[in-house]
Length: 413
Image (tube, rainbow, N blue to C red; front, side, top):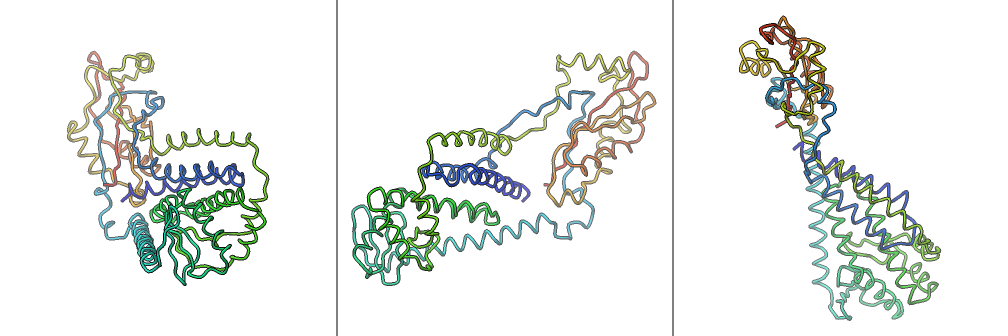
């Protein structure tokens, strides 16, 4: 559950960052094919990057400050939560339930749309027109879906029909319907994300700009603009098709008369390369918590520094907790509780802490080497500070201060 919510959050954030980049730097230029490619890559990246678990090495500068003896990793699960907490509906479960409700609704809507589209295809009169199939019915509005072109059975004028066919055929040749299907799938998955709906609006506009550009390259611009204005009226077309009348005509006419963007402006697209790379690092790279190598020869200087301060990382007779290692683990399991608020929010990860067992066997200098969340960090530090006295470590028969390191992994399930 938490993994799904994390994926959805990261996917939404990734998509939002890419759409803002598009809106600030790319929107409004006349490189329509480039803009279309960027928006499609933004959709794919937002779906793929958070789903990849590419292993990456965690920087060890913080942990290398002091090695000390490291205990085996201890894992605290959500089952260690406060008794009775399971009786309440957690925030995570509530959010997940709301998401599934929306997912189910939009999935049904997508299926209904495909079913309605198939029903329209079956009820229409079919005829061939080059590579396309014309579907005519009195209740149809001009629209297209892959090789299908929807037409009213009796157009007002033959010349209007020719314009409409040219327009919808251009959508088909650009393969715009694939983009729309991808959009509908992403909208179903990320229905709660406003950036999906904003990106859909931008991509549909790019589709119309591409078609308008192709039409006015072969026909008079003024006549085409007049046709757009004449056909402007409300429509109830499916979200799966390209409809001739559903866009802001004023904006399209303005774009048709806008001067071509200078070629130098293509350099803006180069800025997207490091952006995609950064998002890959942020969302696709999984930073793994690993046990530190006690025999790493490069850390001799660290050991020497500890020895000069009369604190050893390894001694002949290491400190022993009350009851041995088994007793230490039992003490931690009995006294370390997963903070309820953090558990409900799905916060998890590994806390690295260090402490010193002094000459008298008491615990001192408890420090956080790397934390996850303040609530988890404090829970781990507190259980170490409250630890019973140990049997101190010895070097050449003398009690000495010894530094230890303890990794504690909090895991929700």
